[in-house]
Image 1 (cartoon, one colour):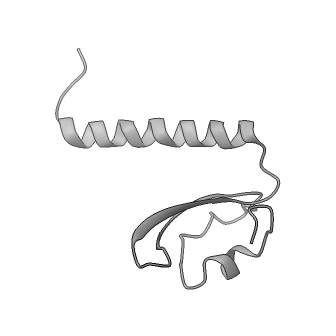
Image 2: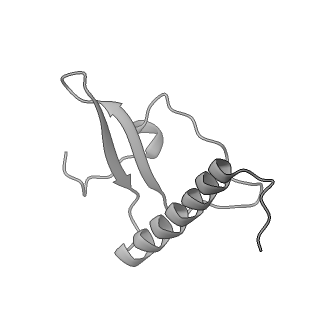
Length: 85
């Protein structure tokens, strides 16, 4: 299967679950990082995206999510009781 062959997300990720979107929200696209076993049983990662997302949207979403996660991890590491000067 080529990266440009698209199937429904539920078909591609059969058996996996995710938290639902808030009420009233409509899904337009997704970026999906999947931890999986390859054909030899080794743990690996696969990256998938839905159709309709351009490279700028992908980069922007990944950059923002990376920055937010970095901040959350730093806050967890330094503790919540430290105050800014």
